[in-house]
Image 1 (cartoon, helix red, strand yellow):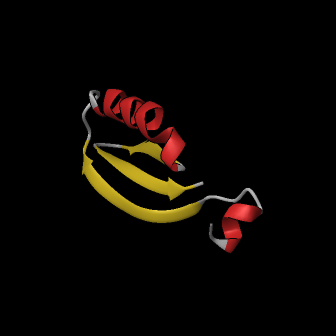
Image 2 (tube, one colour):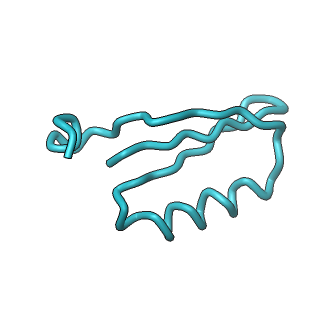
Length: 58
């Protein structure tokens, strides 16, 4: 486990921006539920016509 994981902090692994699509919320929810036990968390932010997916190690 990384040092930041011991403090309860999230470590950013990667980010990727896509054109806005309402279906991405379903994908992020699926990934969070499926990969929780692997200590991964996914985030999604929307800014105008783009959405950014973030991957974190918990």
